[in-house]
Length: 135
Image 1: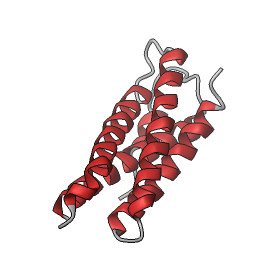
Image 2 (image 1 turned 90 degrees about the vertical axis):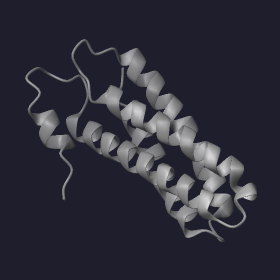
Image 3 (image 1 turned 180 degrees about the vertical axis):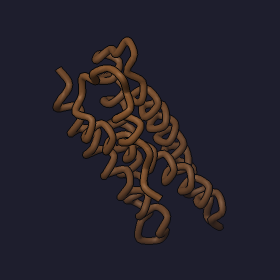
C-alpha cells in the first residue's frame, strides 16, 4: 500500500514553505524509522542475551519517539515555524546516528539490528536533505 503522505500534503489548501516531495519523503522515512526502531527494541527484548542489548533497546526507543514526534511536527503547517522544524530535524539526525551506530554494532548477530541500522541511516539522510532546504 502506498503512503498517504504526499496525497495529504497535496490537499493542503495554503502554500507550504518546504519542497513537498522532500517533505513527504522525510515524513515517510521518519515513520519507517520509528517503526523499525520499535520493532527492533521488541526483538532485542526477545533475545536470550537481552542484558547485552540494554543500550540498544534504550537507543531504539529514544530514536522511535524522536522520529515519531518529528513526523508529526513536519505534518503540520498552519502557523509553520522553521526554527521548530529545524530543531526537530537536528535532534532526529542525532538520534538516528546514535541508534544506527548502536544497531550496526549488533548487526552481525541480529538481523533486526541490521535492518534497523539501515532504516536509521536512510532517515538520517532524509532529515539532512530536508534540513538543507530550510532557511
